[in-house]
Length: 315
Ligand code: AVJ
Image 1 (cartoon, rainbow, N blue to C red):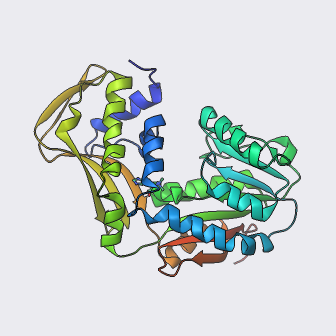
Image 2: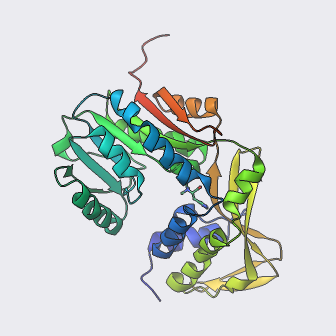
C-alpha cells in the first residue's frame, strides 16, 4: 500500500458514510489525477482552459496598464499552467510568490519559471492558502497582485468561496488587486459536453479517485462497478461529478465496510458557474470591488480584475 495521508483516510471514511456520500474534490488531484486533468485541458469539449488562456494573451497588456509598477505577483496554486508566464511577461513584476500545499509541485514549477525568467525573484511558499498567510518578508513592501486562474474558485460552494476570497484579501493586504478566472453560465449542452468528453478522459479522472482509495487506503472497491456521471444542477448553478454504482456493491476501506445499491452515487466534485452579476456579488461579499471584467465573444469565461475595498465607514 502506498503512503497514506491521515486526512485522506478521514475524509474518505467520513464521506462514504455520510447521508449524501461525497469525497472532497481535492483528493482527485494526486499525481495521476493532475496528469489526467492536464489532459482534460486539451480536450476539444473542454473550453475553459483554452478560452482563459486566449483572454490572458489578449488582455494581459490591458491588465498590466491598470496596475502600478513593482508589483509582487502572488499566485494561489503552484502555477504549473501556461497561464502564469503570460501574466508575468505583461506585468514585469518585482517578485513572484507561488503558494501551494504540495512542495513537490511548487519546486517543479518554480524551477521551470526560473529558466524562463532568470531575473525574476521567486519566493515559493508551501502552505494552505485557504487561511490568511504571512507572505515572505522580501515582498512585504511591494504592492500585491493576487492571481487565481483556472476557475478553481468554482470548486468551492459560495460560502467557502467567500471565505477563501476574504482570506486572500487578508493575505495580500490593503490596496492589493486580484486577477481571477471564473467560468460563466452557458448552454447546458456545452457545459455537459465539457464534463462528459467523448474520449472518456474526465471519466478516467473521476474514477482515478477509486483507484487511489484502493492503493493508498487499502480499499477493495471494484472500480468497474462504478461509472462517471456529470450533471448540471441548475438550482445550485453548478456541474456536479458523481461516481454511480452500476450494481449493488460492497467493499471495505481500511477495514471499514461500505455498501452501495445500484444507482447510488458518490459526489466527487462541484464546478460552479457564475453570471456576470453573480461574480461581482461573490467578490463584493468578500471585500473585493470589480475593476474590470474581460470576456470572450461567446461569453464562456471571464477574467476579472478586482481591488481590495477599503474598510467601509458608512452607512
Ligand atoms: C480545475 C476545478 C477548474 O471544474 O472545470 C474539469 C476541474 N473536473 N473536469 C473544472 C474539472 C472535471 C476543473 N477545475
